[in-house]
Length: 419
Image (tube, rainbow, N blue to C red; front, side):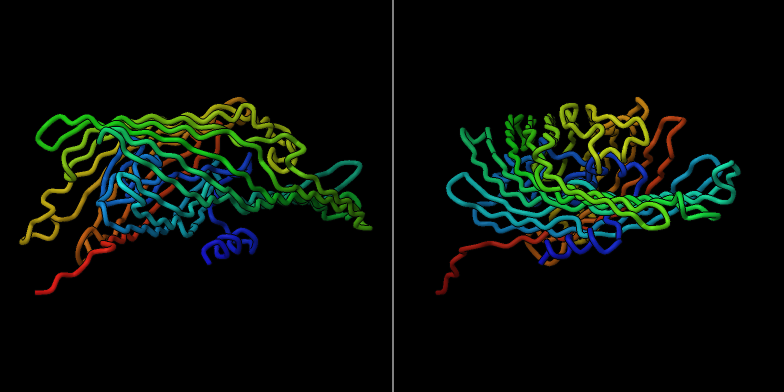
């Protein structure tokens, strides 16, 4: 059912995300993680918490109560303001974020499965200008529109050995639609008018490995080292291109298999270090590097915006710092002391360059979890304030994002006792 919702959002002209920078490659890479991760700047590679599902590192799924069943469902929205010189534009988006369930399998092993976004494409660029020449006199108008994105279904399993080292593996199936259209029209004559479009149906299968090592320090505190590696894999599916030109609407169309073009998704390596004190305090720093230099997206029709700018696949990276604190989880007098509070900051550099420069982003986050009913059920809320396009010549994107996550927790196979 959720897959149908995502597919509809990609093809009916709505936007799962909106940014002029999503015109490049597979679009803007989605900030990974649930509302729990995002409230802390997106950290989680070295986080182990039996109250929340951590989807950033498959090894973390073993941090759980033995008989617990857990689920997470999230929504996200964003308000973005774009500026270039004296021009301003505003856009809002809202979308389903993730759906994940997790449960134990055997002694010291656990499993999780879910659905989450990978990237989003959404932009609408248009301009009109007066032109006078021997070939054409009058106003000419140009428009470029794109929407869609990629999502992944994943399944992960992990086990713990020596009570300190957790090893996990994850399989991802990625899929999605990306649609791009451009048109030029002339006021005085249709002879030179044209339309062009690209439709991408993409999919691939990849794997991700993870590990976490926890070193106790005493008095309930510990240091955790975490790491992940996601493999680079071929992009499959097909690409459809069409062109319509002139007064007689001469049309040309062709379709090609993407696997014949040798396109690849970039690999990813991440490391994290955290300090944890029971379930009350967590402080973590993560670093992630993605390498798309061998992706082949440079100049590939449908991915490179037809070569209108100097787009090149490159190496992207991110630095993330986050923390959370729960004043008193068992306080019976003050409800706010039972809530968990989070804050974080991040710096991201895009996996591509435009005219030789990366598109960087910087932001801060805030979040909290409100306990609901009993066990570890809760409502998580996160806020994200940031800016993309830090170079002087780049379009400035100032955004305010918000996300809501529902954390569900229950105990399985608990046999009631009667006197």
